[in-house]
Image (cartoon, rainbow, N blue to C red):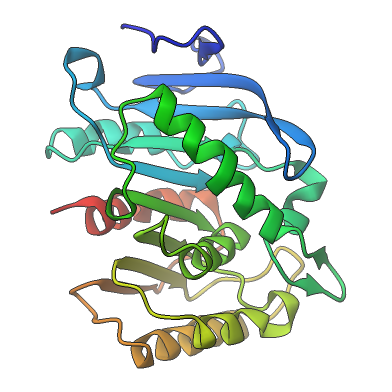
Length: 275
């Protein structure tokens, strides 16, 4: 495999204990001036990347340590690398940028609103980090298609929450968003007001929820489902067209777990990035 022409990128560890397949690179200790912290950045490159000058759409994903490798995941990986390798056989290729969370700072970074019990409120800085620092860096280092129609952002739980925020707060940057099992309960439903008041921009949106969802802190699965259905109704009122530019899925057996997001991931990518 040919390495990207960037000295600071290292190949992701492989071998015993690791489950990475394909070409995944790591930039260690990438600094965020917006947040004042450092984290590794993970980049998956599609199979055809070393063999020409083609440019690729980019999917930015949160909770990056859970995407590619069983060794670094919290309770299992999404198998994003395996899924993208399989999708390449369907001629669907993209660069995937994994942005690891910062552990105890995760809830703070994944919501621009404060929750009275769980914190939050740094999501505006986190999104500025992605938009103003990380994306320009990725666009310089790799052969991307930088326009909004080729730029997607996705995640699950609070990662789904902040992905929908990103679409509506930065419509000039993100033309696609994947919102899996979103935690709309956070900050007492403040996200509904954001979505309702934000201008509608054309693009593609994927949202799903499992019927067995619960928050990591416990709670009623029925309430979790109803919160997502409430957002679904709001999105329809804003003009999203099911099956055209919007795909909404309820997974009857779906729980709040990486294995379920991994199972639904290929369908999300096909809708967001397929032709």
